Figure 1 (cartoon, protein in one colour):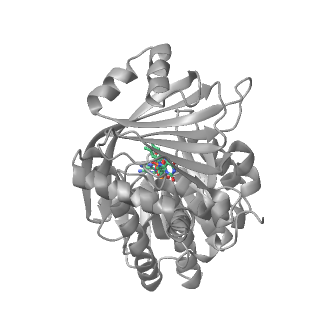
Figure 2 (cartoon, protein in one colour):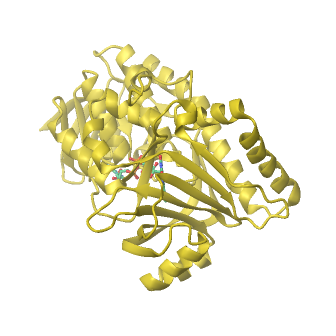
Length: 405
Ligand SMILES: Cc1cc2nc3c(=O)[nH]c(=O)nc-3n(C[C@H](O)[C@H](O)[C@H](O)COP(=O)(O)OP(=O)(O)OC[C@H]3O[C@@H](n4cnc5c(N)ncnc54)[C@H](O)[C@@H]3O)c2cc1C
């Protein structure tokens, strides 16, 4: 027997599940296949205003908000030891008329809640199974799960992560590169408050960031850690006992959060970047990490991926319900996402490399940028809006504020 749907989604991570709900709400029959991973792994995502707007428009924000901690302030502290140090920069959401820039949520909690919501969504079937054996025809696409289920759809959406098997099967060309860095991640509790602030220490090995988390049990003050360092340092620190690693973290952040204790597992992610030539092929569209990937600086990755999802819902909806994989709808999606994906990937790459280069002119340029942001209010506000909800080019699902003030 063959399962039939308008749209098959490969991947049940945050992007695939969100795409499933958005496309089912847009009137398509949707099959999501993958393996929702709800194991707590020391990783969180900061979701900014535009992403919260999407969840609000889909009616999911009330379910997700209690699991997340609002981020009201972003602090950037120059800890590069540069001969041209810049003063700390503090950015407040109220400057751009928001209560918060966004909210930080554990990956496992986000995926768990989205999977639960997906299972309740009419028109959407979510089953375990990894997809392969793709066969692309003129009118539809077929695939088989590792459990032996055959599925036929008018369109297959690749939300199957950075090593996307669908991207390979569809022959979409991409460029991949690596950085001499590894991100060490963990959840922490600490003795002082985080003041609902995300604090980035910019070091010569990359940023070390504390992002606020909601209280849990006896732990009132909690944050997630994303700390970029060399591969050797990451290997050494991954092997340290909890108390020794906690002591190194305290030193790295100048005890700003007081005493630190590790909560649960830590993880290490080698840093790389990936950019596709196109986000579409006949009967195929890619979203999120399957389509683009870069280091977790400025928390842009999934936020960019959710903008793909919102645009895909818009482009496919406008193309009509009779054929979800229409060429003109896919072309519209690809065109609409090009600029945002290109500028975001470039911006993160430049910022990351500027930290790694110990070269005075580069330090000067970065320092001048931070000083300009401190001194020039309109520039600061424009960059803040660009970071959390880029004005002018957001798809309709992201246009209404997540929360009225
Ligand atoms: C350390 C770190 C911190 C980050 N912090 C932030 C942040 O604060 N804010 C932010 O916006 N982004 C952040 N990101 C980026 C963000 O985590 C990713 O962009 C996001 O998780 C990507 O989601 P995804 O659903 O595209 O991919 P994934 O989460 O990788 O999910 C892909 C899914 O596809 C499945 N899959 C693979 N192959 C198949 C197949 N053949 N068939 C079916 N399913 C398949 C996988 O099992 C997986 O479940 C961070 C990333 C890192 C590494």
